[in-house]
Length: 251
Ligand SMILES: Nc1ncnc2c1ncn2[C@@H]1O[C@H](COP(=O)(O)OP(=O)(O)OP(=O)(O)O)[C@@H](O)[C@H]1O
Ligand SMILES: [Mg+2]
Image 1 (cartoon, rainbow, N blue to C red):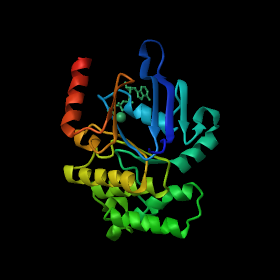
Image 2 (image 1 turned 30 degrees about the horizontal axis):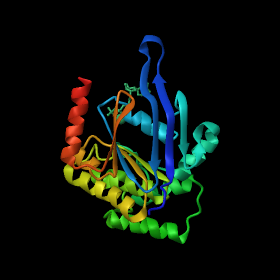
Image 3 (image 1 turned 90 degrees about the vertical axis):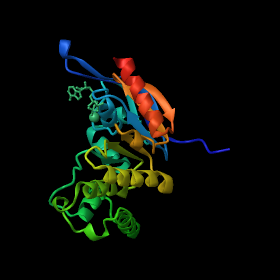
């Protein structure tokens, strides 16, 4: 018998609308989903289907119009802005499509930044972990380089090290391989996959790439702001057919 999984992220009837009157858009419509600890979840769906909206709500970067978001046992609606910022800094690691590194800081300084922002005093374990991360990411020789001196793939690896450095409850990755060539994408996915397998990291990743999503334990399909599919691990071919079905269904 396996131990029951712990839910680290939960959306309860989350709806997000933008605009008013005829310009009103429902980006997310009554979404209820639980994300369990130590799992790698991929979110897929057409452009404009609400994937980034879902990620922004999950990370507490934006509020639902109605419904609730629970992160690491805390209801975000119950917290003020300051408490939410603290919660986000402690519990969420971010990786975006545009690497979002601070251009004036070195790779190492960028990786340590979230820990500094969270007001964490760096322990010997933190140092060792960050060292090991940079080594695993093949950035040993690059730790004192600034983002402008790194390739796209290297910058994204720094962004992943930064997201993992604080051992957050959940890493939210919105198209982390969107800007990378095939080889760099595969490297970045390998890193995300091994963070889940080796360290039990929880990752939620938006991707358009069936090969990327085939690394995930679970694949959520979203269309028009609703979750329309929830699948266990699939092959890239199976995922490609699911995407085609979605598009045919939407046409
Ligand atoms: N700030 C905003 N103001 C108004 N409408 C918005 C805003 N952000 C998103 N939307 C709308 O909400 C819907 C969902 O957008 P979202 O960014 O979540 O899609 P997505 O699935 O991430 O798409 P993509 O794959 O292109 O990144 C879209 O129709 C979009 O135009
Ligand atoms: Mg998006």
